[in-house]
Image 1 (tube, helix red, strand yellow):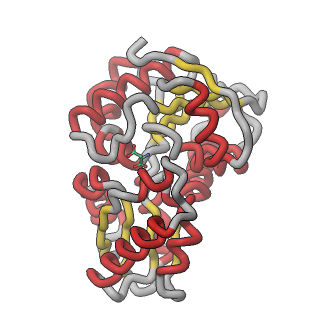
Image 2 (cartoon, helix red, strand yellow):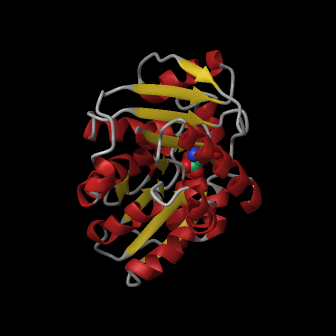
Amino acid sequence: MKIGVFDSGYGGLTILKDIRKRLPQYDYLYLGDNARNPYGSRSFEIVYEFTLQAVKALFQRECHLVILACNTASAKALRSIQQNNLPSLGPTKRVLGVIRPTVEVLPDFTHSKHVGLLATPGTVKSNSYSLELQKLAPEVKITEHACPMWVPIVENNEIESPGADYFVKKEIDNLMNKDPDIDTVVLGCTHYPLLENKIRKYLPETVKILCQGPVVADSLADYLQRHPEIESKLSKGSSIKYLTTEHTEKFDSLASLFLGKAISSHTISIPD
Ligand code: DGL
């Protein structure tokens, strides 16, 4: 059994990188639905349908533990899949997301109890972070802010352009104007760690940045420790295979930007 890591496209590679750094012993299968991304501006129904198809594709390929390394999919599809589909797809199969682990550590980061969330319009609209925070740490106030231009900036490799500076500064200023007491900002989208230097440049120095990769990796390590019945079934060959719904040349060239090294992927169609 392998660990499946799913994202709408390339962004989940930032999460995969940290998971593999923390848990290098396991075998992984990464799936990017690049032919149909971005998910960030799509409706609830479509994100649910696409994510479910991807989860089924990973289940069919021996990944009975799947991480939705995509905030939009975690926000709009995780709960529905867990409640509506997992019981019939197999009671021993598991799907985990990135929002709950992030929210769980937030109270440790913030002193002012005012945090900011930068994410896609879909994640912000879903209110998932606020709802999760209300359950786990109601004393923390979260201000959510959508950054619709940031994913296209990263996907078009415009990270170092003056346009990137303009849009990063604009959204940071908007967020901090909404709540000047924010002392922690969550990068609630898989692409945003690639903009971290610019985000740091425009945020007040005292504001901390919370990147999800290490948090999700720690949470998965903890989950596997608490679930030896799952951990014992995972194969440990330290391998990684990349699947994409797009042409491999396109995936491979941009994936290298996210991973910092060359990779070679395979194309699949979903649903199969
Ligand atoms: N992976 C998505 C997320 O974390 C960003 C890309 C997209 O919109 O599909 O929200």
